[in-house]
Picture (cartoon, rainbow, N blue to C red):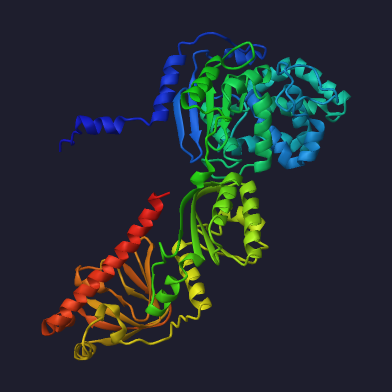
Length: 617
């Protein structure tokens, strides 16, 4: 059989590339022509690298990795290991111990300078003296296991098991006299222990770990993602260690080019004399590049150009951010504008109609940061005090610790004003929940529901109870109380009752299944049921006096599921019998269809109101 051929348009579509990938392709093609610089040779084994190699990779925080060129060619990590080992030391040993031994100030010197600060400590962990001291602290704590701890940490950052280039390790060990001089200087000043040879052996191995441009892009993205590897989902190290590491990378990651780098490019970065550069833009992306030819500062010539192009083309300077806290609110309304999907009885509707502003709903989006929470709290205070405030967070992608702390302070203030807070849209097993509960666990005025509709329904119930209403799920109603049958005569209702069967459903029973023939109508007599789409989205909660399955009058098959929320009873009317009833009572038939049209119109009005709310901000 001859295979189907695609049209030119379809072929072009299948071969199209995302814009970022096209950008990286353009960088590869343009900067491949750059031949300046020289391959590092002070470690003899590094001089064997092919100067033509050029690979670029970019990892996004949702775990997608773009790659062009020689992105899978292995090379040694060298000084790019320094930020990761520093972060590891902070977590393993505690910030106090590490910070008491190693400074965090830029040195302005080359990476291998044999010089300490005025306190006889290394200037920062990005120069060789600081990196050796950092490795020494881990060696003091872990002894013979120190290197394996470091290798495993680097592997977790990369999302795969990393190995050592033994030839580079040997070459580095044989020619590392300058680093030995630094080691003994550190020993003389009691920064590291007596076993300088042991510390340096770990350091040389650490620098000889093999990575690719793809690996370092993922490692950089893990730094940008507050320590969570976006590919594996693992929290590699704590956000505290990551933020401090990024701080030092910003000021000192590119050595005596660091000031120029942060001024012009504005992305925390680290280079290695093996030809790699990694750049981590917080909350955005990680970039990795490999090209062995270095400039006078020891940075990859082509790698610098890629970073410059990415930053300037997409305006990614970290200090040129335009996040507006006002964009955090996607909707702000009371329950009069968007009530729950619960179909209420007349008494309940009357109470709620007079108390619509007692329940305020604020739907949030993006990052729950300090500025976003501050804006929301001021917006909330700008209108009369409600009894209940619902904050829906299902579109919130992350919560900062500062934001969570300000949330707790705002909730505590609401508690003092007797306002109940309801959180919706956050799963209890999520990291966002853990962040929020760290600060709000002691508050007594906070409730939570995963679904916003459930939260609104609960709030409505509270208002009904507080203003003298009752919600009696065990109350029994008759056909005359059904809105769908409104306007029917006593005789018509009696004839309809004669074709009904009273059905009983236990809690949790599935009464109607999507796709089944629509062959009966149900009039809920007692209890409660809910109507859901096949994907689990709840369409409505119904209580005694409401009909369900009424779409059988218009559609031949069921389009939603119905479950009993509790023990329920219902009048069941087979559709074939109901059709005979309609022929016998044409006036009643017309009335039922008018009522059905009104019910559907009411639902459409509610749905349109929700759309208006979401599009009016």
